[in-house]
Image (cartoon, rainbow, N blue to C red; front, top):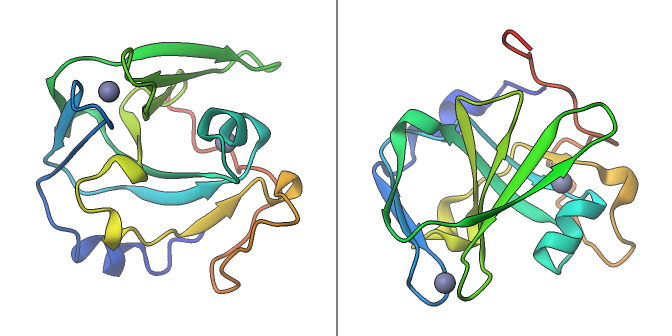
Length: 155
Ligand SMILES: [Zn+2]
Ligand SMILES: [Zn+2]
């Protein structure tokens, strides 16, 4: 994982920040700075987003809370046993958050739901092996054919 500019990039993040779904039922707030920002081009993220990739920001779960409403979760169980839960607004279907069974201390925010998504600065493109030919990626962002497994703390 490229750590190089992470410190610099997160230092300019406006904290706290907020966001919500398209219909306004689900609103959230985050008081912690993002730990990791990336675009995931895997097929699951393509289906769940209806687009070429998911833009995701991982934040400490302790700094994240829902202000109103709550997402419904769809859990996807991978072959290796890890579970990826995708949370979406039960009314309008907006994909809002993701959580990984192996990283319970983090929550992934779908960047398009931020009130101000303009400061997102992806540090990596993951799963470029399944990126679509019409998906134009920023050449200056490091590319990974899959997703390097983050340190699993206690499995
Ligand atoms: Zn909604
Ligand atoms: Zn993905």
